[in-house]
Image (cartoon, rainbow, N blue to C red; front, side, top):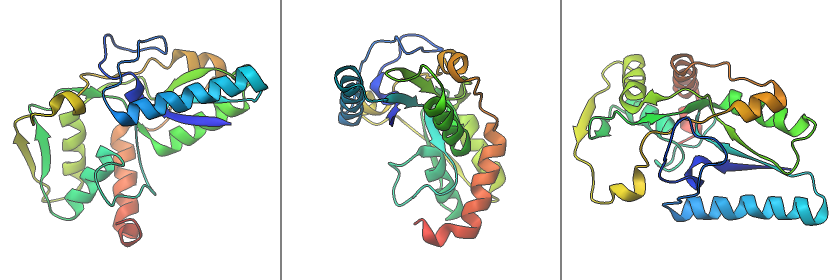
Length: 205
């Protein structure tokens, strides 16, 4: 049984690349719930012998994600906004780095960790290990959708709860356990995602 956890369990980041031993500084109810779920999985592994494993996803994006609102994922949400001719809003200068991972790489990573020997009871970061400035991701979306506008705004007062600083995952533990490595670059993944929603958007928002 694989539990798909989130980078939000780490909260405010103290160092990068960030490994699985980093402290938990959850800044949201979402992160707290995810951490509790992970601990339940570990408990049932230790107490009942269930084959459970947890993966802490970084910033997944790609085809087939619902985009009814902005809570599902920022890359997909910005693609929706651009396809609708709405501006892409960047708070501050957009220099904070994120580890964006394409959905097909996520799926392959999960399958690899589920099938590998010796992963039960463990926790793994699942990302690319590459940090991309937020503004670079935004410009990649804009470059692929003609007429897309990028606008800059000051940070909102609730910045503490929405901004955790740079986040780059250390994925060496997962690589050593499974030999898995992500294959899709951010430019390639964004192109694939935009092409998918140009064809199927009516089913996803």
